[in-house]
Image 1 (spheres, rainbow, N blue to C red):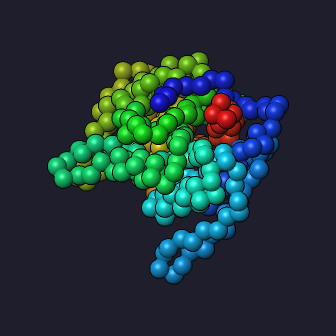
Image 2 (tube, protein in one colour):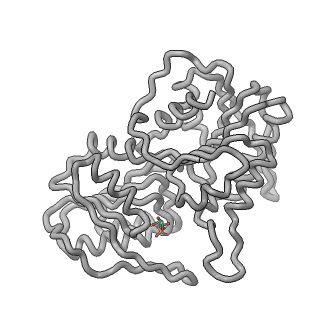
Length: 313
Ligand code: R5P
């Protein structure tokens, strides 16, 4: 199990092809899988997908080698994407694979890592068991919500890759920041924000966020001890889901006369009207990795994932 920042993974230069590894492009991550296969000079396996009218997936894929890497992010529709990952793993087993590494950049259910209220299910525990049962030997994810979630993968190898170096490098190169200031929308993200701020040579704070466990509504402490007026601020989070956390943080920064506000994250789920709510709160740009391929996915994860895969095989 690994949880940390790998600053060496900003680019990938492969001298020796990983020719005995099949990179399988799961239906949710075809672009990322193709980039990884190019980096590693490995065989890219395309999956033929059919969705039946009742919602079931049916996949068909050509023969794979003994070492398989399946790339399938489990963003919405989460259950469908998760099921497809399990189906691909099963097919690799049928083809005689010995090592099956599941690259799941956005790992669905990672937030259900404990029973917050009586009667709740720790679903990430079930996800870990399902992956193992399907034949997965290693699970690789990106910026998992908590180390607690990773601890349920105790019967297979599990690794967390940080996207912070890639995100910071992108922001440094592409965004002109004046007197940059980094903000974590909550205290849980303080370590992440500190790493990001260090790479940008900026100072940072972590806000105090409170979430109503029943309604999901968030509020942040209405006071910051730093003068952000006229400064460009970057809010960094592991994911943007409903957008509520970013909206509250952006509103607070704007109220304190911050100049530009950027929202940077690993996983831009952008559910419902998150994007318009965030823009209305004064955010100038949303930047995310391609763990979820959408209009905000400007940072390619393949250098970090490829370097990690190289260490596995
Ligand atoms: C929560 O602790 C996470 O780090 C994110 O801040 C949260 O999941 C974002 O969700 P939303 O966009 O719905 O506020």
